[in-house]
Image (tube, rainbow, N blue to C red; front, side, top):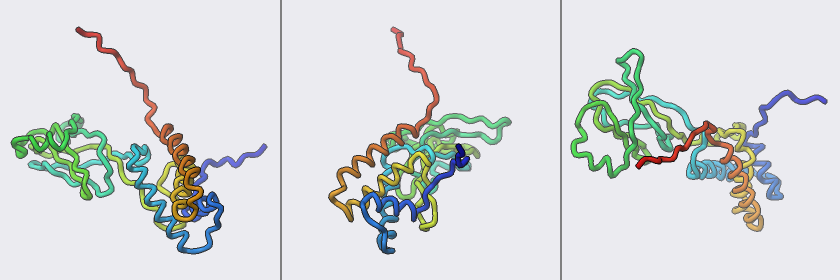
Length: 221
C-alpha cells in the first residue's frame, strides 16, 4: 500500500470558507459571501484570544532598557505577558534574574516610582497600546526578556493559509460554520455551536505544555 509521504495538509481561506458553507448546506456563489466569511473568521480569532492560551502564539521577545526607564511600550499585537526576567548584558556570561508581576493597585501604591535600581517587579497595562511598568526604574542598561501572547494574524488575502496550528483546523472550520449559521442558517445554530465547542475543547486540551511537575504536600508544623 502506497501512502502520500507528506504531512503538510492545510486549508487556504477559499477552501476553508467553502468547507464552512458546505456544512450549512450552501454553495458559495458570490463575492459578498466570501467577504462576510472572512470577517467572521477574524472575529473567531479574537474569540480564541479571550478563551486562553494558544501555544503557537507564545513567543519570546526582548526590550532594551536604558538608565532611568520605568515604562516601556510593548508591540501592539501583544495580548498578554506571561513571565519575564531581567538580563544584565554587562556580565559575562549574561545573568537572567526573575522579576515578579504585580497588579495595577500594587504598582499604584509604590510611593516613589523614580527610585533607580535593578528592576524586580513589573506591571502590564493591557490597553490598546500595551505597556510594561518597571519598579524600580533601571539604574543602568538592561534587557527585559519576556514571553508574550501575540494576536493571531488576520486572515488577509483569500489565497493565504491561516496563522493557526494544524491541531486547530477542525475547530476553525467548525467555528466558522457556526458563525456563518448565525447569518444564513439559524436552524442549524444549536448543533453547529455544540460541534464547535466540542472541537475547541479537544484542541485546547491537546494544546498544552506536557512537562512533568510534582506537587509535594507541606507537612511542616
